[in-house]
Length: 425
Image 1 (cartoon, rainbow, N blue to C red):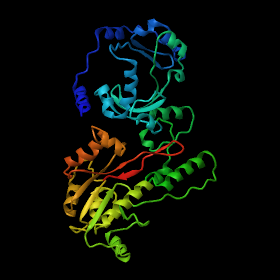
Image 2: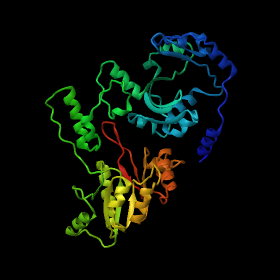
Image 3: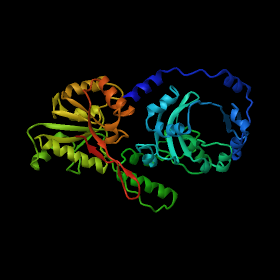
Image 4: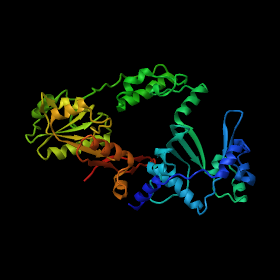
């Protein structure tokens, strides 16, 4: 909890004014542009250390130099900061309030950032969102060791330079644009995120596959790319089309068209319970195998209490209309993993909730956190989960949320990390 108070105080702390001498040097523009190929000069030439300014190279690139003394800061502190701050967006925002917005890291680096104590430095990738000029941009920063970046370790030792922070910075959309500009074929999904001048290739034939990312549709997208790029005889199956709104049960492969069909199936199979019906809502039916296993566990637990269980997917208003008939509810309670009302509780949704007239439980799952990380954290759920799962729903009138499932880490033999869901107890 102490960390929370410190972070809150730091966010309120006013940013210091730029020192007058630094401003004067920026205005003077007296800086020595060092080409990337000659970067070792930054270590060997002591006079470059105190320069401040920027210059444009003939090829359009820029060279920027800044002198920023940090009295009392040690090498170990800096190395710790670059490992620690990437774990939570709040830490990144504290670095530069109003300019830094969020941060995450590559999946391949999960084992590096999730260790309880700081490990030795290794190459890793950050995905920050920060303001460049007046625009917030998503970036990719690939950090490397000084040696891999091209600095001479002998010069570093000779000139008493213990560490150099090195990163290749790319704006993700810019990367696609640059690759396309070289003549490489770059397919973009969705294409609308790029300007009309960008030479990325649209793939409208994939829209039907992309709209429902089932395992078979994802496989079909890969086959489509193989056909486009390697062999015209590759066979592509038709897309699996799913209804925008539907019902399903974990023990049945086919969808139900409506609640009457679900009741008929339950009666025919001796499963119907007279105690009532619980509807569990999701935005999409594209469940992983681990999530399917979790739904079976929830279903079994609810049915053991003498209740029926049905999964409903789609947008909020169509779901509510499907779960009621002329003002009469067809279920007794809604367990909502959707219904987060990120756009607010509009008139149509308010009317649909009133017509259905049953309690809606705000069910949550952990986002980019394991169960152990949540249990041991002084902050609890991360910033995104709090904003999306707590604040927006409660502001719209949804009842107090309930954390229903989390995730656990499980390493495979090839070193990859799986995070299957687990039911919270």
